[in-house]
Image (cartoon, rainbow over all chains, first blue to last red; front, side, top):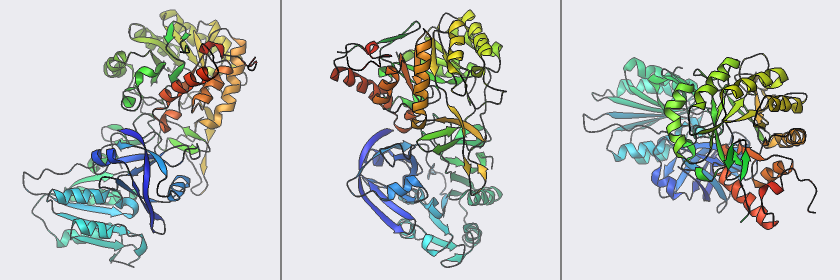
Length: 259
Length: 304
């Protein structure tokens, strides 16, 4: 974990509220695991005061973050130009646990809801690198909010899409698509589910996994101040007491959480 | 080289920059981000007699140039602190001051008695001003209660006692005097201001606890004024706290009368900030040809 001042390599709008930023952060690129995050200071002034957490979207010598403009911090970030410098602290937290491939061959199902796709592309790349059969389900409200379909397809051929309004892929929530996929792709292997998205969706997927006795890892998004386990702001209720999204998470076993 | 050393009670600090309680964990969290040996003193997250789960979420809310927090003194209790945290803290080589809070005088007394036996602890900060615990009023809002808590702790320990004061009072000087008269070695001020924020779309408070404590650059001018008033009126050292983000802010507090300062919220934004502030103060002294830090303390007479 380091706090470094790094250069913005690119910052592109990829659809109306989503941006992708590449940062010259070789240390983080070298050390970050899928599911870990960084804390970015959007501004050198004290407005906004706090850093903003972003999951590591991809690494390739540099790092990429994928973000949605939702408030003053991300608004400022979206105006950064190539060559601008920003402070970045990371890698932080505990990422996803990848399955061991020695004993049997588990399959992985990745489920992304909206901006929840951000940490999952890197995960899909790492899973397929380990030759783990990986299925990806992407859900969003409508067609132009579907993220990373191409990136996921580069990692695995099995990518399915659903939109709430049916403008692209199957119609309905991604949980409906999950049910459908489970029916059509029976597997004799153990199934591990990785999910990131809105809270309601996480709970829904976690419930299905519990019924089916699948292992399920969820990446939570919480408001944070420090990101390093000091302020105790991002508390998460678990069966083994209060944990912190920043230090103990952001990835938790779904069965550990009190929903 | 300019002299940065200061003395608070019996503690000799190599410089006046202290990491504030609740913003620096138990120091280990920062070991990769700042040189812990460069900090004047480290004040650990407030501990209580029994473990506390803390308040419901959300616990943090950003405001204009500030943060509202309502953590609720979440901690594992003193037993765990002594077992799990003290061994690491003892090895750092920087004075360690332990912040404590109790539900009543007895709890403060018991906590202080147990800490008194630990050689590697240099001092105790009495957190009588946390706004996020459900009691009727704060100890630090009442001169008599403040006096009694400090007196009880003074009885049991010779270690340096720092009493942390609340700004949520009509006359902070009176409370500071009560702490001084009861034997406190120093006062630190200010803890956070009572505050609140509402989400107008959900019509709900932005904090689970409804109200919380405001900190950050937005409180600095008020904190500075309080440090000025208190330091003029008492004889024990005042430790200035409130929105200190850089060396300039720290120097301002010292000119207002603080013998040392604490850095709080800034640790969340720039984890290496304490070290940076020490260097900044040193540069300032060099630039203005000031021999020792004490020469600027409480000095508002201009350059002459």
